[in-house]
Length: 171
Image (cartoon, rainbow, N blue to C red; front, side, top):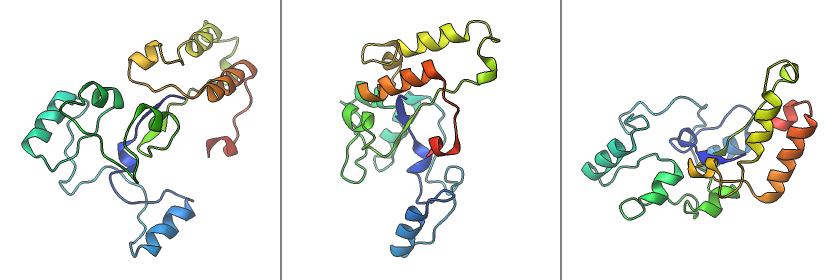
């Protein structure tokens, strides 16, 4: 679905569960593979919530610091903020949409099969949701970056056909 920033995955080197490739890469680099955990607690990360202006104020006080923002805020304030380059990729609309900027994640939409025909309006809500996946939608206006058209078509088909979600779908 739409992509948004994912600070917990860029805040420290770690591997999650069965991600053997990430664990091996850390080991090859001479680093101990840590399990995923909460945000850093060593003072390098300061919680400012979703108060973007407060984060900017803290960045102005410490020009060597990093802030965590949604892409829309970064884009709207590019005159005073600079996105962090990760593995040679800068945060752009296109790099986030196609998944190349690794500090982004998909926004997923799940519906229980047991709710279809039981929860009033759920089918209408699902149909309405699919209408807002493009570049000129309310989701885009809220800072979400639309999926490529082929992915939108696939997700719209899933919303219509309601396949049963299995573990392999979560990879």
